[in-house]
Image 1 (cartoon, rainbow, N blue to C red):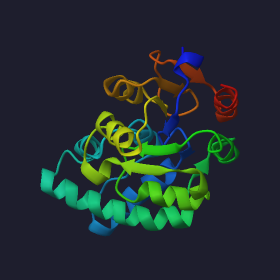
Image 2 (image 1 turned 180 degrees about the vertical axis):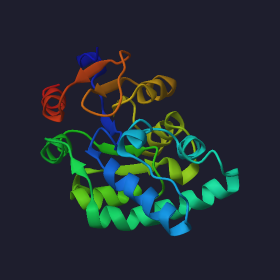
Image 3 (image 1 turned 120 degrees about the vertical axis):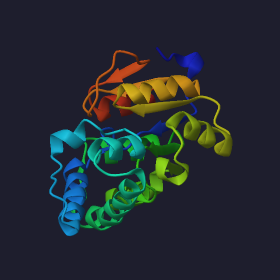
Image 4 (image 1 turned 90 degrees about the vertical axis):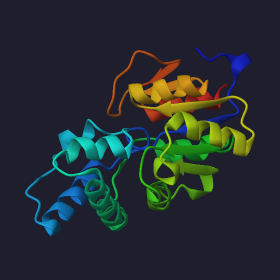
Length: 214
């Protein structure tokens, strides 16, 4: 458990499954592109939800095993381009308590978003959710194609963070937090499960209240 001797100086949030659910929009972006290319394939919500938090390279290997690597990346680039349009149009579902919680937490901590998504998606989410005033910085897998542990350390170095925590919803988030050498805060309402965490919250409001009262 995190105690007052280890009070965090910043909070780094995962995006999908932690701050919002945009799986329907993500799946639709795949299906629109497949249809436009004449590819007889449909991605279902349940299939994609199980891959939330994966790095893009792994996702496209599973979703498009019939294609060579270069073709997978070409299609993936098209999907991400379409996704930029669809996020603006369709958005997603912001989890209860997130918008108000981030506003309150930003008064006490620098807040960051770090996700295994494509370049530009976090920025679109921030604009869509209207939380720009509360977020200090963000970094996506699509910037450098490096794992979360690497990008956590980049944020720490860039902003001089000494005691950040990472907040996420999957076992992979926990593993990457450990590799980065920082505590992991698990939110159980997202897409994953794990027993390896320092703190666990079942809703965002409880998380907000905990860190406000530290």
